[in-house]
Each structure stands twice: as structure tokens, then as C-alpha cells.
Image (tube, rainbow, N blue to C red; front, side):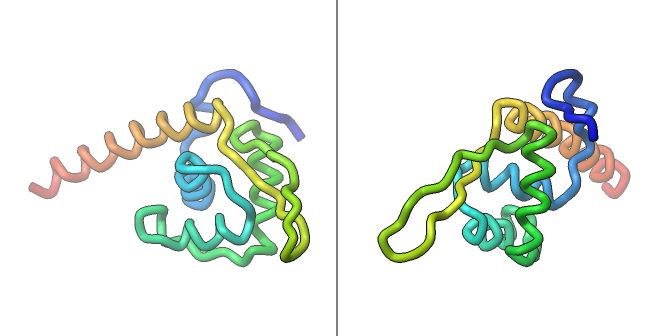
Length: 114
């Protein structure tokens, strides 16, 4: 499997809705799996539903493509360690490019309906 950690941002576009939702919430702050699932369910993050068990496959793919970073595990006194994830510099650039792309689409559609 090829890994696209550099190169043209357009290689990563358009983002899948789930990927975009994950990048949006991770751009706000790094977090662990269950909280990412809860946060992407918010309307402003896409209102996406995903089982926590499926999230890790998506995050692993996004790590391989360089959009997300595995920040390691954090020990807790009240339970098992949690694995934290953050957005990478490439992920921030791709998210910004996707926002521009989506904005252009929305402006084009808006112009046709007015």
C-alpha cells in the first residue's frame, strides 16, 4: 500500500466525509477514540455516526496517509490507557484545502439557486 505523506495536496482530495469530520475535531484538539466518535456526531463536525471499533481502522489508514498522528497512550488511574490521536501538519493543510474546495462548490450551487 502506498503512503502519501508528501506531495500535492490534491492527492488527498476530495476527503471522505468521515475523514473530514475526524480532521475537523482533531484540528480543535487531540483526543482518544471514544471521544472522537462522540465529537464527530456533533452537527458542526458532520453529524456522523460510527462505532468506536470501526474508528481505529479509519484512524490507522489516516496515519498511513500522513493526515493523523498517533500520539501514544496515556495511563489513567481509573481505567486502561487511552490511545490519543492528533492532526498532522499535512492533515491541517489538506483540511484547509478541502474547506476551500467545498466552499467553492457551495458558492457555485448557491449561485445557481438564487
